[in-house]
Image (cartoon, rainbow, N blue to C red; front, side):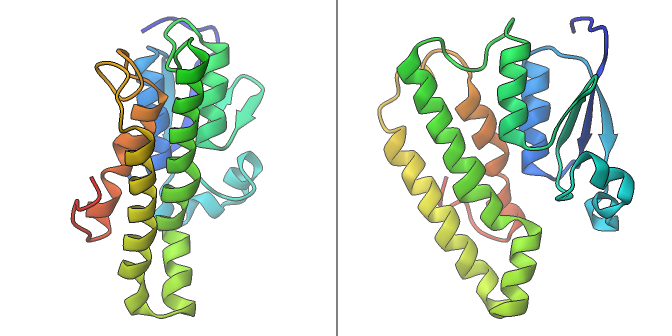
Length: 187
């Protein structure tokens, strides 16, 4: 791992797919960081201390000196710009755009719709039997879009010969269907 003047701090939850993608990115970039666990089940994200870092109360949060970033996609882009030594986005503009597009499908069209707070709301407002149909619809739609978008691999991996942003975002998302009692029918 490389030495950094100010060690990065990552507020994270082990089961959070958003947090996981940032831990993967930090490790692939060989960046040292302090892991600060946030127990979502105990409501630690709702504490006034954590809300100062992220008013919406979600993980992950990355602190880099005086810079505080609280969205996995924003954190990823920040890390890519500030620590370019080991890039996770291709230099080719078309491949970079494809990576960002695919990552955005995961970060905004799949993952948030299977978030615990969303599922609790669906169960409370629509009904407890609607959780699985909701998940099947949204996860299925998202993975179908990814499959179409990434159908023609550009190399060893989906967008070239290097492991990149699209792989980092998809990795943990593959775990969520199982966690939500769904089969891997979408993978």
